Amino acid sequence: MTDTAPHHRACGGQSSYSNDIMDMPGDPAWTNDPEMRVFLAFMKKYARDSYPNDQLSIFGYYNSAMVVARIKRCGDNLTRDNLQVQATHLKNVSVPMPLPGITQHRA
Figure 1 (cartoon, rainbow, N blue to C red):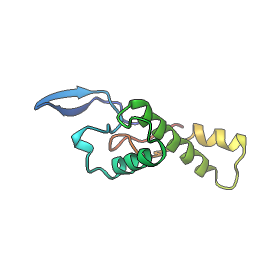
Figure 2: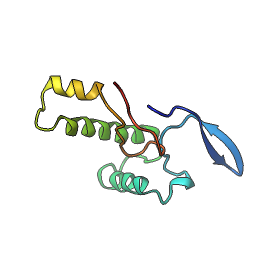
Figure 3: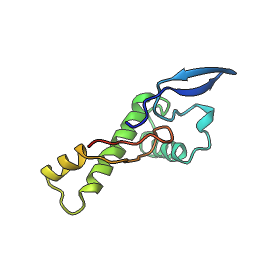
Figure 4: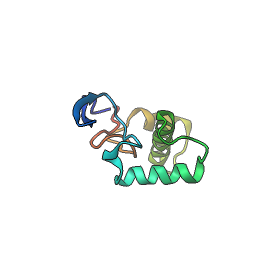
């Protein structure tokens, strides 16, 4: 991750710091966020029995998006070797749900 600094969050009228790196459903700060709306629509359609505020739901959604990003980077060369190269040489890959400005970068 390129950004691991704690992020300032408003909490009950008081300031707090968190090491969260993901947008969190239920946090009023993300109510109108386009990525959050897509996530909640996805959960409603494909995971009705799951609780969208559960961090495991968010991480599963995020990790799935990372898998898709890696496969797309393979292009027409979808081999084990190329997938491994793409997974270990990410450069500023952005997928839904991390806080703004957080990207994957591995060289």
